[in-house]
Length: 153
Image (cartoon, rainbow, N blue to C red; front, side):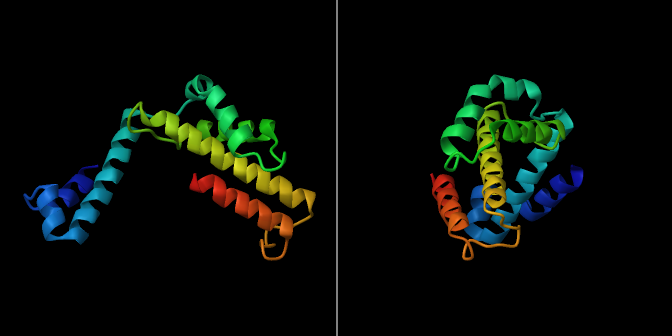
């Protein structure tokens, strides 16, 4: 953590972020990136990890995101998707910086997992391997279009 803080201080050289943005945009964005990494390290050190309790708290949101937003033509297997989400949370790699951020992290994770689940189920249903692209299969092409529309909202 201290090395990140030292790098930030070296780049800033006593200047504020506003001055840095005005004088040297590249350095400004480097400081922003390092600050983001530092805040994640601080969150890890504080033990701010998404837990099963958070999943329980946002259970209805998770189910809604998966079934209403991420379900492509009924290919979602909700049980498998929820199991995958629990596995990701139990791995202890999901960090939140503030309590307000938990909801968006959980919602985005639910959507991503639902889309992954649907894609694997579409591939299994149409006997498509992982090397098959959407240009080779109309079913996969339509799924990719659905995915793009879903993620752009």
